[in-house]
Length: 412
Image 1 (cartoon, one colour):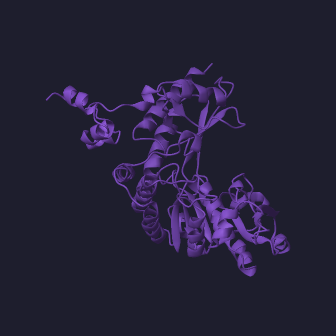
Image 2: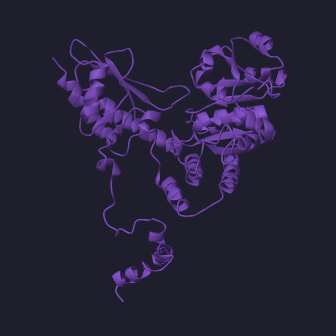
Image 3: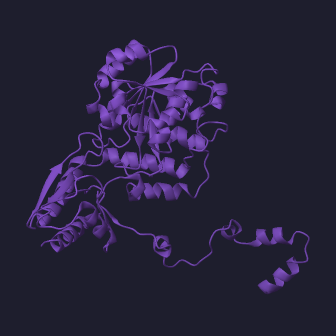
């Protein structure tokens, strides 16, 4: 009997659609594509989405970092199986906690999410009633409502804490902390990136928190490398640490890690998905991201970091030696002390010899082929910044060549 005859006959059956569905191959019944294997679709090209060489860094708007093969394999493998989310979080969290010297850990929807959930955990503890009340009427619910933060540490990301309903109380000195602490104080927060600008450093901050019997949190979102920062602040005694997973670690961009004291992480999970009526219900992390984050962290910790740094230095040399051939161009290489701790190249030029602005050069590189992104914003109009740690193999030579072409073209 021909297939069209089967279809005709099934059309007269009461449950024809259901019967027909049961006769389809399993993949088709699930709505999967039955296309024959051939050339894979390139949706970026199909949709006309610009791709570029990333000589800027791990900026979220630039989709941060690229995942390694081990991470993609973990994601692809787990995408083909069903799992219970809580079990994945349990097992992955246990492994990550051991890696980072923490009592407990969990994968979050980025560092911002880690800050919100960690703060929520401090406020509610294991009280399910309080979990359902965040972020409203904290004091009416018997929760504390203030978090102490140094003025130099305000940079906008404290909003992740404020999302729980707390008020951020600014301080500058140890005496300010003593005066600020009261019955409403929930915790003390520290922004690692701005540590040099603050008057109170990590050890004194922790001592003050211990003096007042308060939990402490720290934001180290982009502060890896060095690899030791993954466990440094847990070893120091911070109550929880928030980390981005999609920057130098090269995990899924939308993933992060919350690590710290066991009771806080457990409470943070109560405030998180898949639990309903929680502040974190929309901060969903799928099983693929959890396992991808674990694979990325495992790879990052165990890779040869000295070899990686040497590779960066070689790439820097490739670029600087090429552009320094141009009359009027100089280069400076620096390493940011905390966040984005990797070599940064500043290329400067004599405006009397090269008629380009910082923005002009950035635009030319962006619109060229291949497109290249550098740090083309800022006040200095006659220099540009770039990094090499997000470049693929061989792209340092392309960047060097393009920079020399554009800078030479501006000579007068």
